[in-house]
Length: 294
Image (cartoon, rainbow, N blue to C red):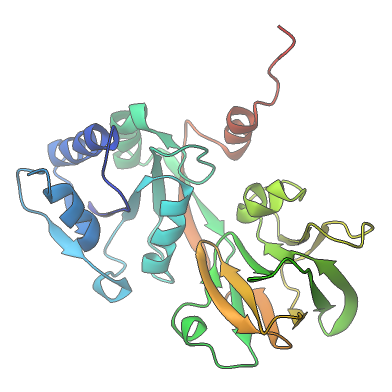
């Protein structure tokens, strides 16, 4: 088996869990490649003892990798997507962060998780991604224009709200007067959208959700639509620029510009071990079913 490992930080208690991970993989004779910057971080403390092969970009990977392991939280998982892209390398996240809707392997269950991975006691879940284009040239979008969780437009460097004219398959929907608007996938429904009052959507649902951010028109509510819808947004703001977010990555767009958002032409594979399900994760993270009256 050939695996990649991606992480963003190496400090505190994370050190011991990374040691456990690498030791477990070595014991199972698994070929390991570590992302170059992450490898440099862990070598600062003269660890690991052996040398590892590295990768530094999407171009260094191919479908000979059977899995990409992420070490961190959901933010680390989202960053790993920019390396995997359309290569069909499944991602499995080890959570040494906080919430962990995407990085579902708990840090004290690493050895057990690797055993399940090797014995193929898991299922592959296909996750929808979003792709965005703009009617104005944008260098950032020309490099990476997709997102797993959400694409959002929001105000930038101003306290004034913005207006977001929205069209679904070229039919006018409404103008949101708000701090911004989120377009989320089912995967992203438990992220930024949820914190703004959006619904939780099962990962296998063929849907997207439009969730306004602090809308001034109080009758504006989250709207679930088909994933095959093409969404066009026109941004109107007193300021010259607005903010466009693709998961944890941000860029600026000019006011009065138009963007188009639709389902990407490729999907992301994620690994769900037999011990973990989406609804089990929901119960654990949102504390559903727990009696708090004591």
